Figure 1 (tube, rainbow, N blue to C red):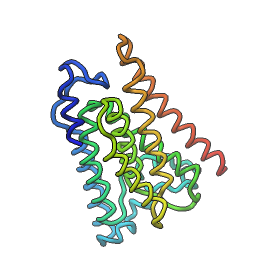
Figure 2 (figure 1 turned 135 degrees about the horizontal axis):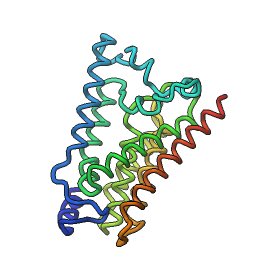
Figure 3 (figure 1 turned 90 degrees about the horizontal axis):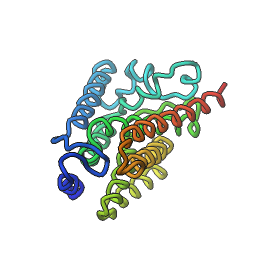
Length: 239
């Protein structure tokens, strides 16, 4: 996947396919990893267990439980994306974020990357609200990470670079999501769809236009509003 970063660097200094200026070394992805690891350590400390850190009070407060969201605890649609159950869950998500996220941040730029990551997280939460058990807790950055997979696929297509590797990664993870118990395929699917859709709009809509930045702001806001509307629909269905 290094070819994606190389292609981005080959674009003119003032813009690339996403309309972003070259920002240099990625900083958002490492920051996200630090935050996720720090929260994991805090849950381990408060639970008194490495593998059973889900016993931490932070999980009771922050995991995504659709019925709790319907009762007004709306922060869960975001906080759940920073909680992980056990070290393997954390390691898998952070490794995927490190490998894929850096490539995406290089092309989208920091601001757009944060926006796509956030919309992907909301999209994953929306799918959980609509398709998961009302009382089952969901946690993890997987929805946002799957959003990065979708974003990477779109960027490779836009740059006319081979997509076989990322398609294989997505396919394997989709199969795992549907075949292993305890994995939220709903969050994965929602994140993947929203991440790909918003990234496609960012790199294709308004290209060459003086108003491209305004178009991109509208796209990001629109994606977030759609996700929130779906979350609202999930809440309404539970009331």
